[in-house]
Amino acid sequence: MNGNGMKKRWISLYVENQVGVLSKISGLFSGKSYNLDSLTVGKTEDPTVSRMTIATVSDDETFEQIKKQLNRLVEVIKVIDFTDIFVRMKEILYVKVRKCTPEDKVELFQIAETFKAKVIDYGHDSLLLEFVQTTAKNDAVVKLMKEEFQSIEVVRGGCVAIESISMMDR
Image (tube, rainbow, N blue to C red):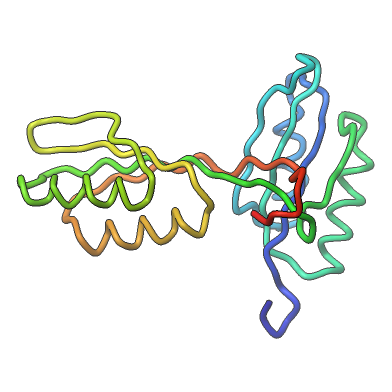
């Protein structure tokens, strides 16, 4: 946490699975000038309910305000603050590396092995890797890839999270 009380926050929302809910929730953030670092959404075991995982950076007061405003929305069933509880959290990351030399490909297979990634597509001079890990590890991968290879393309899916059964952290 830095001096002004700003820190990374995570919220999980159960919402009604209907048209316009995602737009309404993201609109609440943009309308108040809160930045969303990540927002993922998908159906739950109940097809009428979706679950969102939202990452943002804010101070305590602003974050409490965000949670209160989310709780007021009629489409929101439940708001869970994941900031200080044990959760399992992962993000999907795809990195396509183009203009690979044979040496680059050897290094990419070593990177894949080190970071527990999968090589999911392979071409004459390119490789596509899939990583499913924490945001911090994905940040490190992207930094490494930018430094090591001349032409990369990055797509990130945003975090999904669930409360941990044991007391293991992220």
